[in-house]
Length: 137
Image 1 (spheres, helix red, strand yellow):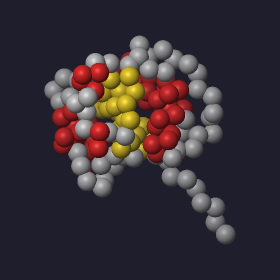
Image 2 (cartoon, one colour):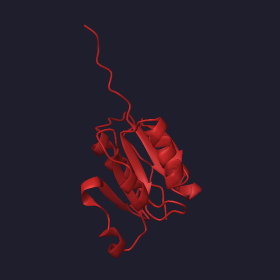
Image 3 (tube, helix red, strand yellow):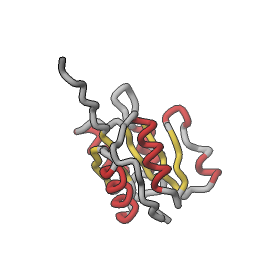
Image 4 (spheres, helix red, strand yellow):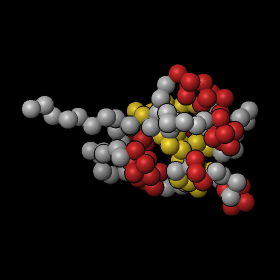
């Protein structure tokens, strides 16, 4: 009998701030995710055209095409779940289409919270149970 190997969840991290992009990418990779990144919404849409992802960790406030624009343009059964990361005000957060957003992480965030959210949204199991606290703000 062959052993069933769990599929590695694929994540697209979209943020225009290089430090945040790197922090989130490294934390998720450390916990067993396969991660790619995009510098803004236009870059994210290009990557979504050529690859499939289980989850997209998406900043709201970005140049060229913001998170709202990305959410408007993705749909269908192949669209990834969306985890929003934002420093936006509660007024801006109310504008998010709740039917297309699986979760919201507010900046500055605890990296453990982000990893736990990504795990729960993708059913990803990690062998590395300890997450070092990192201040993302």
